[in-house]
Length: 139
Image (cartoon, rainbow, N blue to C red; front, top):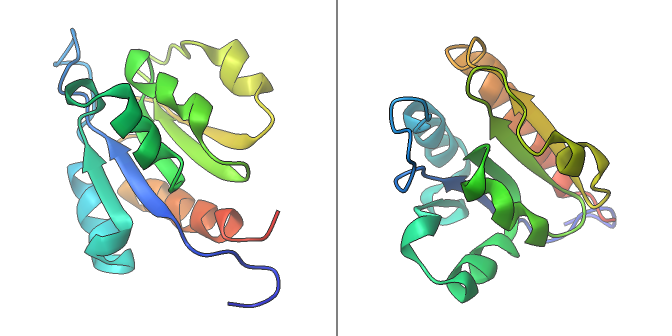
């Protein structure tokens, strides 16, 4: 590690298994495969936050560099992301739920991915790579 780097954290994918709209959510199949191939399985965490306790959720999220999740209730845990990290939010019907919170939070970066952009895997993984670099700079 150089002077301007910190120890790498994880790339966390929040699965929407508890969603009330399973036909509208995104499951990150291709992004998960890419992240595991590029960064190794030890740095990629795939979790259904609805199935674990709040304490377990916090233990995972505080070690996260980049959090990929559908917007809505499942993304609320992003409040506990460490300073300098990123959340990549996947929207439904291009509605930015909780946008006031995400646009004004100061300790992590927010990136929105619309329904039309979901098939553009190259864009999503490029964003992931970019945010990993940013998250590993020393704040």
